Amino acid sequence: MIANFSNVFFHYFWEILPALAIGFFLSGLIQEFVPEKIISKHLGGKGIKPIFYTTLVGMLLPICCWGSLPIAIGLHKKGARLGPVISFLVATPATSVSALLVTWKLLGLKFTIFIFFAVILMGVIMGLIGNLFNIKPKEIIETICSECSKEKICHIHRKGFFAHVKSILKVAFVDMVKEIGPEILLGIFLAAIVDTFVPIGNLIKQYLTGAAGYAFSLIFGLLTYICSTATVPFVDALINQGMNIGAGMVMLLVGPVTSYGTILVLKKEFGLKLLMAYLFGLSALSLSLGYLFYLIY
Image (cartoon, rainbow, N blue to C red; front, side):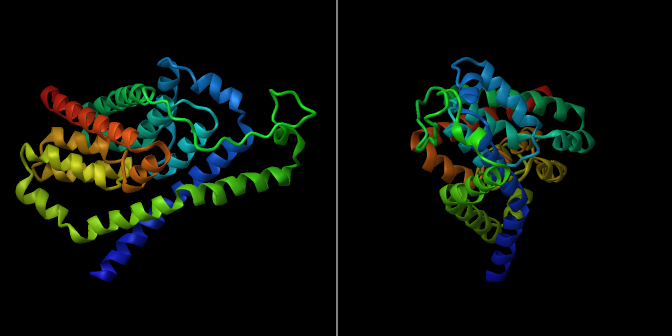
């Protein structure tokens, strides 16, 4: 059992490590080169436009929920409102170009079209919910040179190339790792426990071929990490075993969006109230959209 747990833990760790590295690095680039003024202008507004913008951008990025976390935290620290940050956290891992192509191949055009528009709807609604919370970033790094105007940040135009690289790497792989690294490791640990000690496959085959599949898909999706592309063949297998197609859609929508790491980081950065709103909103939306897909299909 211990050996199996270790294998699952390191499988998760090595699977998400590239995405985490990319996410940390992009966060470092944002911190180093993107002025607060730009993010505040485009992502700091109260309307639906910045939410819709981050939703579409997030859908195009091939980054999982683990990799999107440091980017979202970096955007928030730079001045983005919570709404666009939450919509980014939902839309980025929920689907991608590769996931949509695999969905088309395995599950058909109806699944593909529905999940495309469902992710947009989820991202926008969750972003609007996020804008209801007025949560300031815990730390805003802003260094103004006395010789520069207040609209320019000294370190952007005074540093040399290697100084930029040093700052990016420090933010990405020192500051961000210290801030959310422990929560991510704990999330992997909990996910490995679930995969090791819970006979999920047997439960689905024996008990969850009917309406109960909705509840199971939701709980399983909330508590485990499955990337958007890998979710598709998994859901295809479940449907072939008899799972309700609406429950399969629930798994496709919520499975890639949440993980223990996401839950722990959101709790630490934004508080319990925001986390509860995030989980409740995702649960209600995924179940409603899953049942709607069942009716349409």
